[in-house]
Amino acid sequence: MQASRYHGQRDVRVDDVDDPTLGPDEVRIEVDSCGICGSDLHEYVAGPIFVPDRDPHPLTGERLPITMGHEFGGVITAVGDGVSTHEKGQAVAVNPIVWCGECRYCVEGKYHLCESVGFVGLSGGGGGFSERVTVPAVQAVPLPDGVPTEHGALVEPFSVGLHAVRRSGLQAGDSVAVFGSGPIGLAVVQAARAAGAGRIFVSEPREARRSLARESGADDLVDPTETDPVEYVHAETGGGTDVTFEVAGIETTFKQALETAKADGRVTIVSIFEGEISMHPNTIVLGERAVTGTLAYLGGPLSDREFGAVLRLFGDGELDPEALVTARIDLPDVVDEGFDELLDGESEHVKILVRP
Ligand SMILES: [Zn+2]
Ligand SMILES: [Zn+2]
Image (cartoon, rainbow, N blue to C red; front, side, top):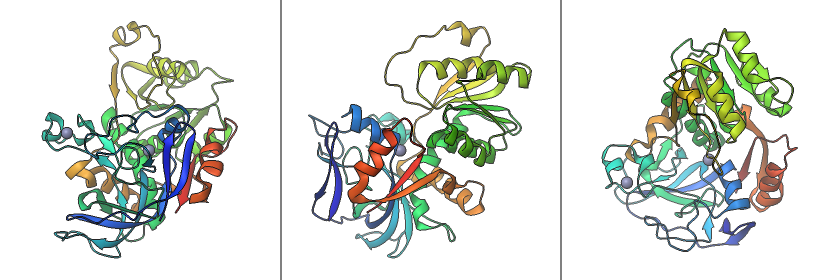
């Protein structure tokens, strides 16, 4: 079968590989769609970061070349021995977290913080940029009736957004500011809206992304190249929002997220940064602000907790996955029409789905 594999920096190829074997407690999935993620782009231009390079991943035992794609869904075509929870023909979204089950975080149920954490599509175990994948059945979360199979690919980024909102402690009616409205920023906006947020501000330099933020439920849009978002939000809210989210991963937006939160407000950092930044700690101390990190979503035996919640919200229309999708492409075009397109700073694309 065809699979798009990471061989090294700027070296992603569509290879012919063997079909994955089906073990006990696993399901085989015919991939319908797989989203291209910001972390795929990071691996491509600056990697290997998550992809095991010299040493094999401790849980998958694999090193590059690695099949990419961790945001995917499809239809089950076979179930392994011992699987009674799933059946052939079922549409599922895959929770890609790979966990050890033995470290202190796994014992505490925080599988996404596992000391050996990995992701299907980055750490081995196949990936969504291929025709077929096998995963443990517990990682295959069934789609409710009415949710198109294709939207299985959007459950992962929306789970990042949902988990971030849960981590933020957002209460119904709270005012919110979101810095950056790429795919995860948009998912945060939608999850905050679904959680009952009050007024939502979004600061984003790209026009196309601001208009998607509007579609996703933002009330106020700021172009930070023209208006100082901190001053604007302070003026509009009488001194800052209850909650802010940093979803751009640069020093400027980190500081803006801190300064835009009111005193006693809560700041949630969603981005992964490429390096150190400088900031004044008193911004946190003098306003008694709380700063929280958020990573991924619940996984392992809890794979269906946040994935399932997202799917129910897809089904109810509370979350709108289609608002993120700007293109659909075929597997052989993943680099030219996918990675390269998204890396173009002028691009209007947000989420590109690959159809193997
Ligand atoms: Zn992702
Ligand atoms: Zn563990």
